[in-house]
Length: 90
Image (cartoon, rainbow, N blue to C red; front, side, top):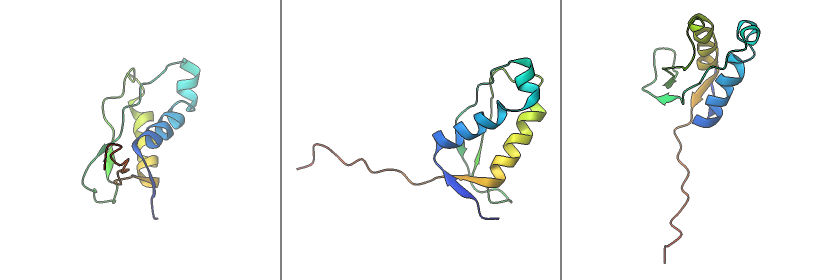
C-alpha cells in the first residue's frame, strides 16, 4: 500500500482525531496530549516518522499504540519544506 503524505501539523491532527474518538477515551472523558511527529529514517515498513511522550496517557498506552500503528501504515511525514522566500531580497 502506498502511503499518503501529510505535513507535521496535519499528521498530529489526524492522530489526535483518531485517539479522541476511541470509545474508552470518550467514556473516560480524558484529553490526551498528542505530540508532533518526529522524522526518522524509514523503518522496515517504510514509515518515516514516529511519536513519543503522549501526555495524560496513563492506562491508554495500548489504545494509542493501535492508533499509531494504523496511522503509520497509512501516512508518511512530508519532508518537503516550503520556501517562503526572503521578503527583503533585491
